[in-house]
Image (cartoon, rainbow, N blue to C red; front, side, top):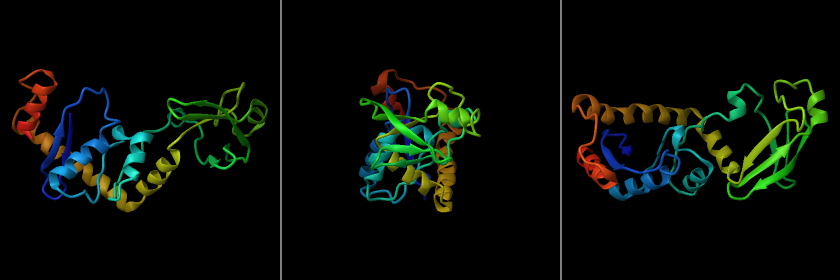
Length: 208
């Protein structure tokens, strides 16, 4: 289920049920439906990182209304404790540079996902003072993955690190939990009565 909550009044203005196994593709669609319900665009909108991917961020960035978004979940390398910042990208030459100034060359493209891979090379990386921290790959050296919409993502990430955006995100966490808590705790809703997408959507609509 996905829900959109009004900040001022704490009211549910949009709810929906989908068959998707995650929320990555839902943010633009749900906000468009909420805009239609309110008959005006939201001045600011926020969602947790489960709604963020490059394709959806590009759609959000194209909107004229201000859309605040939290930083997406940590990259795999960051979760593993590897060095991830600051790696720069030269769009004209289509190469990346590591913090030590070494060039990471473009090596492959996965067109379906818009994924571009860059390798640092084994010789330089093995002799680098950050070897073992930045990368442990003795064959290709450090690898960087970029996506077609990374420029949009990086711009929104910069915006979301601003204090004003963090205030919006904090309010999002607070406001989203109130109606859901009311449904579950006060009304005792722990399951849906009907089955199937249409039935569950009817249940959720009545509850909302």
